[in-house]
Amino acid sequence: MADPMRIRANMAGDKVEVRVLMSHEMETGQRKDASGAIVPAHFIQTVTVTHAGKTVLSAQWGTSISKNPFMHFRFKGGKPGDKVTISWVDNKGDRRTDEVVIGGG
Amino acid sequence: MPFYRLLAPVLAAMLPCVSLAQQDTQKEIERYRQLLQESNPAELYEARGEELWKTRRGPKSASLESCDLGLGPGVVKGAYVQLPRYFADTDRVQDAESRLVTCMVTLQGFTPEEAKRNPFSGTGVPMLTTDPFSGVGRRSVMTDIVAWVASESRGMKIAPRMSHPKEREAYQAGERLFFYRAGPHDFACVSCHSGEAKRIRLQTLPDLVHSAKDAQRAFGTWPGYRVSEGELRSMQWRLWECFRQQRFPELEFASDASIALTMFLAKRAEGGSFDAPSLKR
Image 1 (cartoon, rainbow over the protein chains, first blue to last red):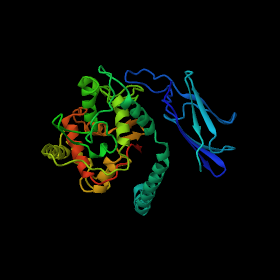
Image 2 (image 1 turned 90 degrees about the vertical axis):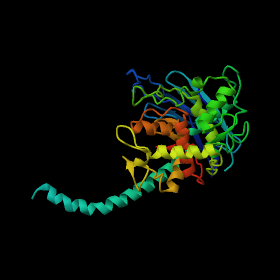
Image 3 (image 1 turned 90 degrees about the horizontal axis):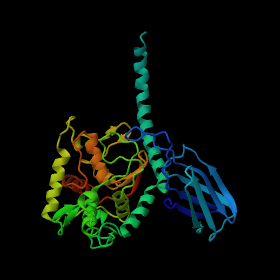
């Protein structure tokens, strides 16, 4: 299983502000290694963020997203103590899901 | 009229604008760096490093939790900023990374070669085919651990020891190395790191000879996550890379020469704030 995501979620006014750092190589499939062989593509393709059973963010990523992606977003409807769940799936089928509890403002 | 005769007055008029623009650019770069701090992937290395410190590894199946980094066995908080220093058990001056090698050998039973292998995580696209630290997505245990050890000194003052005769010797050796011109370009560290407002392409070079502030900032921001390489880089790596850039022979990982240079630079940075692991270009 991949490295855990580092997630922070706090209130910002009436919105929940989430910052997430994901550990992923995000290899484009266009680089070559020392021997000249192509480094195979390995990147996150879908990201889903859910709160109280609802999807609050969904993303389709490609090769333009850098290594160790960082995402910063806000959504309405959450309060301190609620859980926010973030999942990603990559092109090899690897996946990772992590949760965070929303902190105060 | 020839084109270049028209060009000269135009260029002269542009010069003050260029230097103003340079100052604004520098400010913008600083602001951009501030914004990036909240998303520093160094956190990922620190988290792994903390795990590895506590993980049983090697032939002796032991963790590093009783490793003495100078403040007593297992004391990591504040350890990085008092290094390099003299250690009685090895009778030598050691920096953080060479001390971790010692602990991996004595506590975990690795051979020195095993402990020093793959000290730098893979860059994926090496610049030289003989680059010993390249390798696609290859994790380095040493890099992860030193990232965490450094993070445990974050915000503290840089204060290397200088009481033991061997510590002073290391400083003097480091100073000589800093000023020693060698290699095909006849460079020394001082060639780039002395004098105001020097830069390589768009990278400003800290004046490590005349400016205490520059020296503090430089030493206080390594280890750092290098965005352009997608990897966290340590002080040992930074020195190895400087040697490569000068086309010097390879600086051996955790060697006495690297420790001496680190001692010299740490002493020059004394009193500065340790802000590592940081985020770098």
